[in-house]
Image (tube, rainbow, N blue to C red):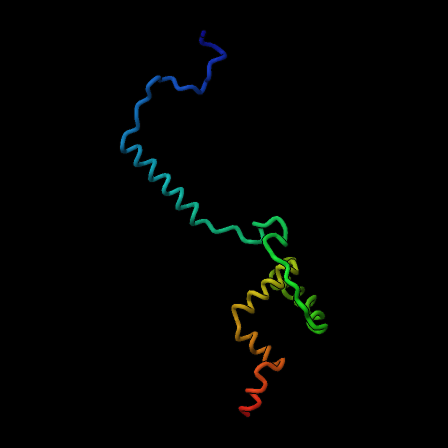
Length: 126
């Protein structure tokens, strides 16, 4: 076949390229390792941006609330948005509130005592 416009311009010109020296192989290994370290030290993408929709990877759980609690929901969301500085999905806000409650059972216990939990014990100790 004739050399010309049909030849691959990116083809190797040497039929038998020189093998890489040990120094070159070590250098490549170091570059690969540092690249791997950089990839693992970068911060994770926040949950808000990893998902395609607010309901992704969530299970729906029914929750029953009293009217006075339902009335506080919109105020809670507005205050939360003011605090965060942007719009917040109600689903995210309520799940975050649940996580905070789970991380602070003492606060939840305090509220439950106001609702009457542990009432008999606290009344008996008076």
